[in-house]
Picture 1 (cartoon, rainbow, N blue to C red):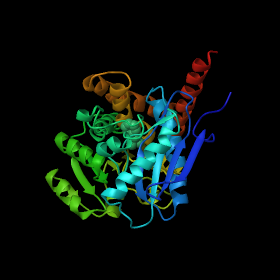
Picture 2 (cartoon, rainbow, N blue to C red):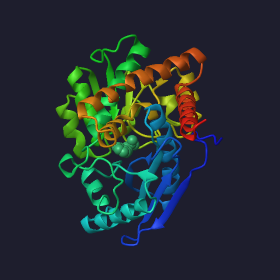
Picture 3 (cartoon, helix red, strand yellow):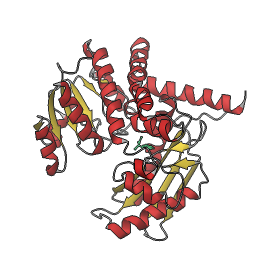
Picture 4 (spheres, rainbow, N blue to C red):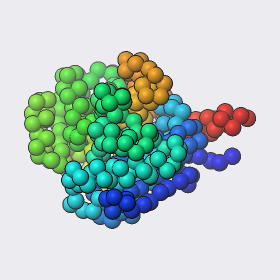
Length: 355
Ligand code: PHE
């Protein structure tokens, strides 16, 4: 049988110059071993489109593990539209590029479905859906399950409680301090929810205009670098990935890390550095699954949003299981999570293959 964990090669990767937009459209289908591959559509600037391809390959492989750990009958995929440095699409280009994305997805004949991600939202899913049926999270009045970011944030809060219970002996967040790095769609929800618990907060974003969100939440506003190395109980990465590196980990002053950013570790070996420093890292593939759990429960399985919310909060149990396995076996949480994901993918594949 094929070893279908995140190390295995992708099933299918499309790199195409959009016929309308002229922009590089990359759709990476990592695995359909458990079912249709899912993963969001990222619209972001890259120095070169090849960097976008590298990102798409890593992000889609992580989605396979994310789906498996969330217990979903889905595999991993991702779309990246690699915008040249400094370029922001205007309204017309945006429509063109989203239609280009829709055409590429339509060509995959159901092997992959997209959703919102960094740089896209529910309205963009409506535009993509003009070309293909395979787009999650259209607004509710347009027939979709709506914005997934609030549900992702609910999952993050559940994960933070589980993490704090393991690391500090109590799931009560009010006694803890958090540094939220990134106040985009998900990060701003997380900050507001943490503020509601009475926790002590520090926050940051590259975009200074987001400072008002921090002020409203009663969070101290600091620069991104100071936020990363803040002297807090828990760091909450909620921006782009790759922030935990051989350079940054020695400078961290937090005791634990959990957040919705995808691909937080620059390389798998960084998990060992965190482990050596006794910083408890909650794997992003577990923590960030709330959006896909909610969207698939509502759109594929006909559940109500409340029923889906129960599943989203199940992230707490999944994380507790991963952290306890890691402790019991002396491995890193990253290794424990990936091992469990690989097992689920192989089991699921065996059942699908009928042996
Ligand atoms: N951005 C989401 C993620 O990384 C992608 C997504 C959300 C896909 C909702 C489908 C539905 O998990």
